Image 1 (cartoon, rainbow, N blue to C red):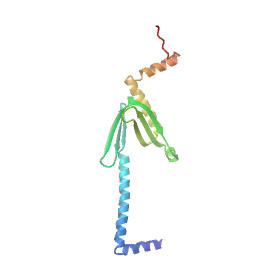
Image 2 (image 1 turned 90 degrees about the horizontal axis):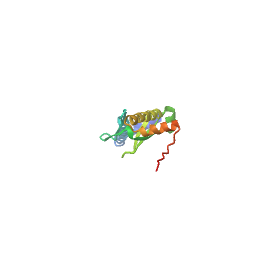
Image 3 (image 1 turned 180 degrees about the vertical axis):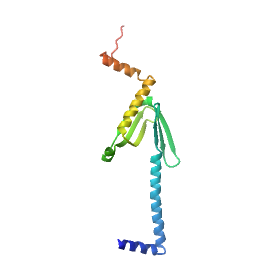
Length: 158
């Protein structure tokens, strides 16, 4: 260990090599800090807001680029929770994918805690919103017919 510090001191005391070594190490550590700052900013400023009417997704890309999009809960077709790897499984972190038929076909909630619970909550809110807007009327009627033992086949008299 003492030998290492002697080599470092010898390099830093040289008139040309010393300042170059200081500048290179300063640039290296500055680039590490900048990378960490950009990653933290990107993660921290990505926001998802789930209300009883819609989901709002705000994604930060870099420092000066933000994309905000929303989808109505009634348009949700599929919600998938994905937990991959032993670390994500142990800490219960993962991704939630929301599929719609709109232009932006997939919303992604990246690295969120308890993805299965979030998925179930979104499905529950979506079903409530569809009931409120009357979009599940056909679905509810078909469930009632199945419970009553009625066939879904309709016959008409000619």
